Length: 300
Image 1 (tube, rainbow, N blue to C red):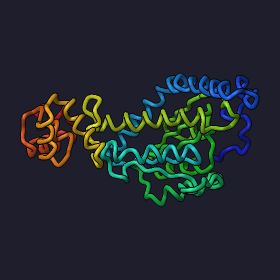
Image 2: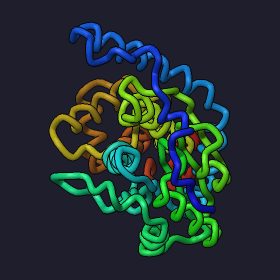
Image 3: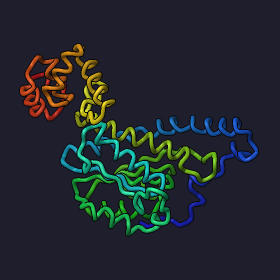
Image 4: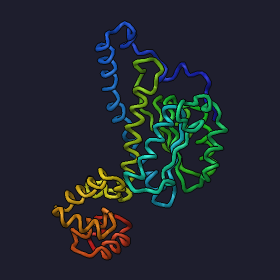
């Protein structure tokens, strides 16, 4: 399926009647208009929640079965995928290969290469280069819903038997028709016509936050509302980790420090040690038997 080259009819390309005089506004008026438009985004995301639910269930199942998650996009959409993927290892203790991001043209440090998005074969080649398998899941991200690079990636993913999800901000999107699960967040026209780094970008960031966080919670990366696989790799994070263990267990500072030392800074094992009153070795044994889920480990 090829993307239609004419984008004029897309939701994301329409003129916003509320901001037609943007260039004549005072700074306060301009920012007020932008803020008012931003308020429309959470409501649009809420309408798409059933589709997000379906996507999370699909992704969690794939990762639980040994698959990987790939975000694929171009421009702002691709860079948002990179941000979400890069946050998973420090936040959830995942290996870097579990959640990966592909951006058309790569991630340039000093400038964006927007021309690479026009080549669908490049999207397919980039995924092939990562050794995509049928166990994996690919999330194609495109505000317009028809970016050729993303279309090519999703077509390749389907041919490889991988599961697919589309995240677009235009209804009836090309990528939505290609994917197993389609999330279409209709945020409406931008304050600055066609500038999809605004409301569309905000919507995509919210949905990606939901996808990664909900998936990781389902995979046992949380206990209550605490992130218990966080990697305490600097002083701030070490303090945060100890604070979380203390709040999760009610233990005092000395007990938390002793547990964290005994477990080699492992938050899950420290929590099990303190709540179950067991040794570090027993805490690790229980967690292994429980698939890393703290609540299951606490049941013994």
